Length: 100
Ligand SMILES: [Zn+2]
Ligand SMILES: [Zn+2]
Image 1 (cartoon, rainbow, N blue to C red):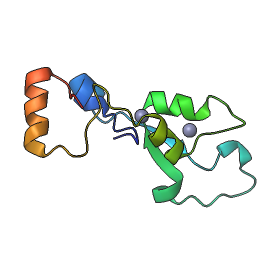
Image 2: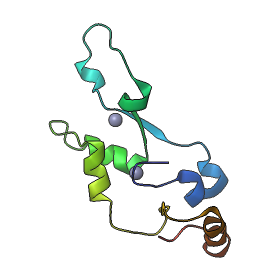
Image 3: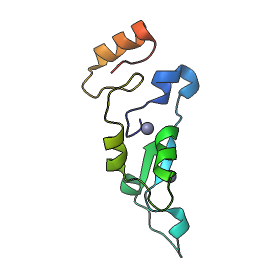
Image 4: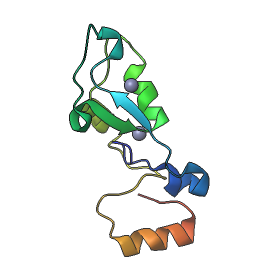
């Protein structure tokens, strides 16, 4: 799931299964010799929209916290963290996608 809570499979179904992009928080272009990558902190799973927004201005890449702040408004298709699994199942059955 993306940091904006977008989940490809929940929205697009089977076709979105396993789809996610990986954002490197240490820009690859700044790589000199060898770079030590800490997967937990340096590789962030993001949806295509957020990834595009992060890189939109190369001189000013967004941080994870920036993205979260930008997409904090609730909208259709995003998973609400407060939902229990029963509720998620119900939404999926009734609406086809999740309503936050
Ligand atoms: Zn990236
Ligand atoms: Zn996203």
